[in-house]
Image (tube, rainbow, N blue to C red; front, top):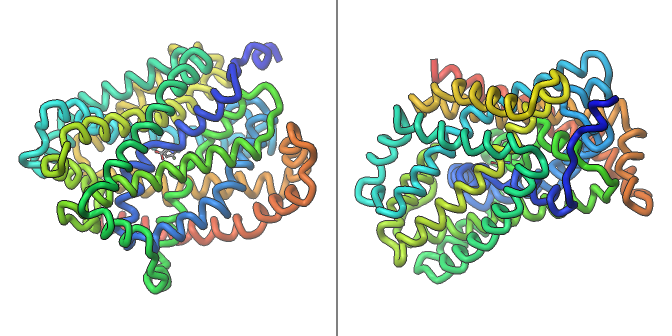
Length: 444
Ligand code: PFF
């Protein structure tokens, strides 16, 4: 009881919304999104992804918010209170997922920090492929993985109001303004028209022909980018004190995240098409290598490089703090740990778990696909079942707070959660597991 009383809270509504937007907008939008679009044939992927965001992402985010604000606890405590008994262990699964994701997320974000610094000298432009290999593995990668993790630890150590809220109030508006400026610049490039055509005219035949891989990839991307399925949104909304309209907040957060991913496409594809690179080369390094190369060739490339990698680094940091906060809130609430120590200990442990990725980037696919296409989908499925089938009344009552009544919208939401969302998640999970088994077989 006394623990609940001294629990922190957001100082302002804007603070909460910006933190959630900051969490959502991250490597998922800048690094993962364009290469998923490229790999799965452009606009076809975009359409399926948008469908997932609207029909699955929004209801699933509301599920997390209703649990978090209702219980005002970390995912383990929240699920134990909500579902009782064994649900505690499912809360534990979320903490585990957060750990796995943070560990490799920080390695990739470390590359971004390195690219940002090297943008000032243009060190990557001459031989971008070799440069990427050099900095993405070995001690270079370990060093920047450490630098990035230290920054995330420092912010989380200061807590919700003085750490996370202050940081996101600076970072998130900067990301938005700089990205829009880049998109305007990209519009002036020679390859813009061709790029927009690739990006914006869907080939539905392609979706039909390749649905077994487009479907789980788009579902995984939707969950990854909206920070769903691993307890982040439960954790962030658990620091809400007043009862605001959670539906409205969800709309704003999803609109920002989707809008920013979309704008990143409007920046990246015109740049690639201008120098004649087709964005269909798969793999996590693609965006780094190809963009670094283009920054050496396009007009004002040096400045564009600085701004692009700067935005990229800020986006990654405002997300990493939310992932770390999931585990820290668990340690503080459930284990009675002191916040600063918890942030340091947990960040340090995630740093160690990320080391295999820093030494050999081939592990990224192994970590990333497991996280995005299996664990996040599983996590969301479990929450959806809990709320939809076992705690619908309670969740509806929670969402009603701060509104003048949900009316039929509440019924629509709960039935979306119970049937179509659950079915799509089961199918995506099955396909995701099959794809992952294939990947493992290839790897071994
Ligand atoms: N949503 C953020 C991103 O797109 O990078 C951060 C993130 C959160 C990634 C949760 C993955 C995840 F499971």
